[in-house]
Length: 191
Image (cartoon, rainbow, N blue to C red; front, side, top):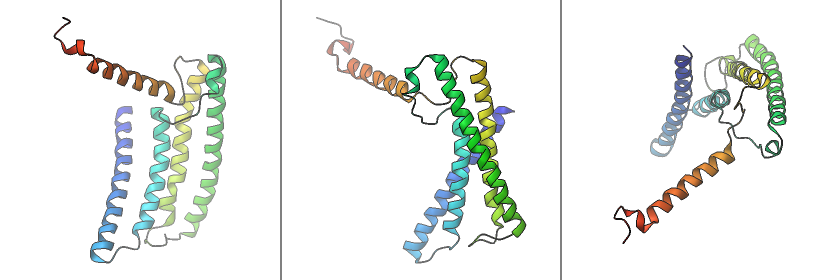
């Protein structure tokens, strides 16, 4: 079930991105080829981008791919790094919680008023619901990370290790270049 939900989430993010590209491309063609265009396209693309960003944040937490500055934390021992991680997750959850509350208030006002978007005949609360969904998903994704950090689970990090990844990448490239430039590596052997 978890794999199925993950697949749906990835497909939805891809659909958002594809829809944004298609709407934007169609408007470029419409403007420069046919000298026309749809008034609602920019607004739709803006809302889709907001959805993409908020779902992307949650997905990034899930896949542990957010970029972070961890050079300072790496100066300390593992238990201290874990404390920094816990504080970071708690700060992120607090921020997302405040945003969730503010989003709820904002969403309730828009829902009560029933106003439509500026250029589309769709209630504004439909598009703004992503604030609630996105912030809730962020909190839901941070809870297991917090429990893993609190339980002392080995290898838990809230960020990708960019410096290690970069060093490993360059090391692999260097080894590959070294092997291909070595004349004795041609398979013919030494004379």
